[in-house]
Length: 77
Image (cartoon, rainbow, N blue to C red; front, top):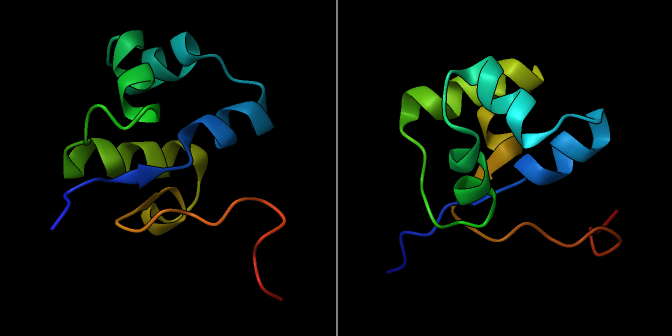
């Protein structure tokens, strides 16, 4: 069983025009941590996942999943 955590952090950042550094500063983490998260090289603690969801004002399940997110345009109606 894979313990990979998939996320939409990069997509949310792009939608809002937020840099990795800006997000990192808002969350109190190093900017490289954001890159590691986005690439799936690091899984966030529950606390950090909740802080990220709170920052983007969405539910944690909107950002993180144990299954790959469907690509844009592939989502069923």
